[in-house]
Image (tube, rainbow, N blue to C red):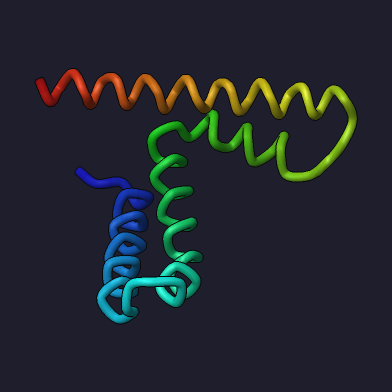
Length: 95
């Protein structure tokens, strides 16, 4: 069964692939497809680690107090750990 976020990521991936097909390789493609690349990356990260991703979005969205900056750093670290676990699990499945 697919979640709605998965189908949303699938649509973004298809849009990015279409952008790459339409645009010649080089700076124009990088510039023209950048928003889709960023959106797909955020979708995949948000799907893989939803709580950690939301914490980063919440705590790191703007400047603030030293407490908020510390919470942002902690949220980024938690997200990094979550993504590392997914990468390790994927690599172990490939063996």
